[in-house]
Length: 372
Figure: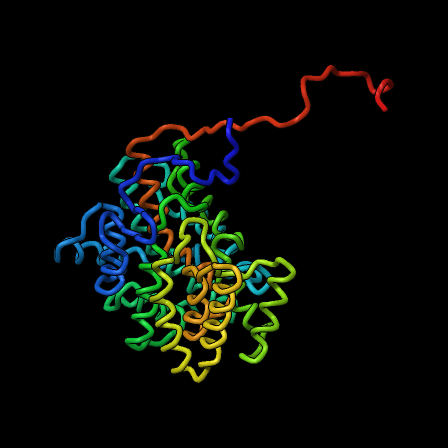
């Protein structure tokens, strides 16, 4: 059996949701450039769940359902207030809170296609409120009810900050949500499919995926990018810092990608938003530092920025706490998890790979008195 560490290059499933061919990413046949420049996030969610873009009536109905589920139950609000969120990473709080959503859903264990699709809408909507609620409660602020007149992206920023976002802020989040929505069999999505392939419920699948996304090699990269920028401090320090990291063979977070060897097609949009937003916030040096890091790593290692690299300064410029970056990634990627969960249920087979044994040969048990 040939070793494929990390399952690299192994095809483990068929999917109609997204495709990565070279540097081209598509969602159900639509190029990511086309969607990022033209679509609302709600349209993209509908697309990857149904393999078609919604018409006007379908989109209006989908938005109405999202809005109807977005408010948190009193029990969920009480849960968020029941422990000290300042001492818990928000991804841990979000993971637990998603699990608790099932306790307030009387159809949580109904595995019919109709109920699972309805639960998918419910989860997508409530994750936005959970992320915003966690952020507010830990800062001793009231949880804000959603505004049904707003888009999904604008509503999230409204619930997070308590004020209507600007058009540029709404556009930035909308693009970020679209760019992160799905990415074939990434670690968290594969985790979700493995979980529900046992015919576990949809909430379990999302919780399992959230646990995988929490890891710094997957969803935590953009938070690590901001930590790195903070350590560097100024543009003048970039060269020495990065060269030192490279000489010590340390990983530069946000650079390189397992799949994209010639560059992540999603990165350019967040690079543009990073430049615009850092200038608007009076912190252009953050973007300049990022660009210089990217230049050095490209020249020295041949690695290019991935989607997480510039999303860090985008979120920072929107006033979002750095440890909320991965929960916001969750807010987007949960749409992809749900798409893959529904696809797995529709044509299920238990996912049970084999492992190549490389341990000792067969041995005989010896009594404890005879062992060295």
